[in-house]
View 1 (cartoon, rainbow, N blue to C red):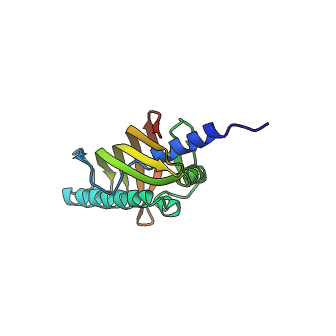
View 2: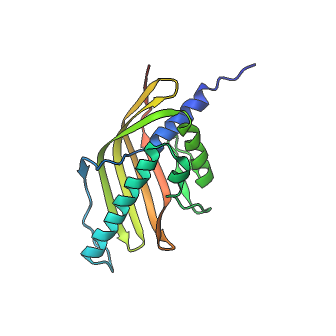
View 3: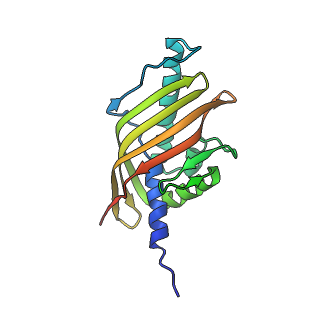
Length: 179
């Protein structure tokens, strides 16, 4: 008896679309909260915000290029890394990579429309990045998929003088699929 693979493929693709949740264009609306950050001057905080903004811009360029290997270099590859997948399940680094590699392999093109983002510097070594985007992609089968609103959060920690996402979470309603 042959098993219907559509639900598995659909779930992997939905996870991928949620994973690739921004693009290299600046967000139309940027909200960065001014909060007390003990031990940091205003200039240090602004420099950290720029570092993270540049980092996520490069990350999302690699996402649009569908380069899973480069995309995963932005995440901490340790047992401490955590991801909350679009279906509400928890995943580790390897699970996130496999889930998204499966999705990347199904895409021909991908585009994101930024709506809002926020960079909140929590300390000199901890930054919270939150975003809201719309997404559209074309599968290799020619089907078009889109999401009106995708929200996500990345928690960055400075590890060995390099920013790495130590936590990743994404949420969205089911995609609209068109032929």
